Length: 305
Length: 227
Image 1: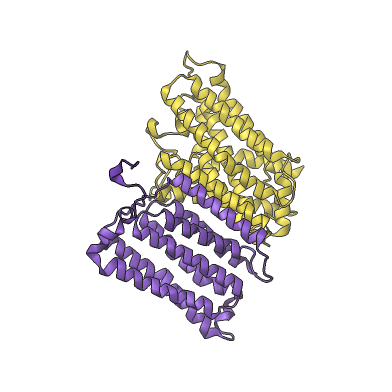
Image 2 (image 1 turned 120 degrees about the vertical axis):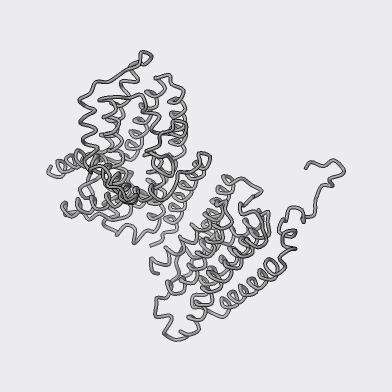
């Protein structure tokens, strides 16, 4: 019970802080003072107090988009263990619910984007759908690598098995899975090298252009949903790399938090030092991610111990 | 078998994928050099650091140093120099597109895993990744040499093929025997050849470097064959 409460507290206070932390890493890498780490909180608080503006061409889909996306991500967040190896919600096959919820959330946002009737948003929606679909095989292959050893398609079982057997040190396939998952993470979260979250040119945007017309509370929901997505995906990434000890919740939470903020540092530094890929190179990047994850499966089949 | 061996072999496979998909000649040469470093570290990872001091220690240490100097130093240096001096295009222009190249490479790696894991018997005491990693390096190298348009990228493919032979030798024969050292000596030969063909004869290189024209044409151009 306590662990469930800790899990929910983490989900409430972690994500926006993590986003602010990435911004801080990026500003430090560029030798700027940067906004306060809690800036995203201030932004969301301000947006929630504002009213929303709706175009006359939009329908219920536009209003529902951010809410459905946030709700999907919030349910998905309950499936990923944050406090050791047990998640509040876990059952055999929950990885499929997880990926389904992620896709449903994205689908709701894409419908909302196309509902505006804006050419730019339609273009962005098409790109987000295309790259999201190409990233999906990588995600499933990674989840296969993670869950195959325990024979149960559930995050909690898979990660507790990893903690028992020693994870990465015993199974090099997990390293490949983690690399492929890193590629999925930057694609799903639309970060460099796939997409630049700070770009100001609609023609090159992927994720940002999809949410261009949302304002006020809707934009706040979009921001929270995005931050939550980043939080749970980075948590899975950490789980793949570090066998988080079970049985000691405090140690587990500490390990997870440290790991997630290290992932954030990695994302921030990556964004500071490399440029985004040319749009035509992105499919190749995503195919490479799937191939790497597939090699991870081959490595597991060989029974490397 | 130590986990570091597995990680090194995985790094070698990853570099294969990288070389097959990178479009820059320079990046390919660098990846080749990195693979050389991984190969030099392989005997140490397999048998532990004491392999350099125990028994035929000097033997192994010399072989490791020779591998490092040649594969990670001299050969990449010679290739980079040849690239700049001969004025070949620094973008790789393969016959097949990068996407298909990537999928083909993945297929070759899968084939190598199938042959190395399911068909060949696994030798006791060696990493199960050894033969698949070596075979995939060999196959990818062969593919790269086949699909290359310029002499320089063909040489890169050949070097990777040779790296695969090195890994298989290392994995099948365990302790560093004379056969593997002969492989290293073959590298010296390759390095000398590279120097001779690509660097010293500076001007002819430009004409030789483009293999497309030097291939015997199967279809006679004048008789209206598809071109």
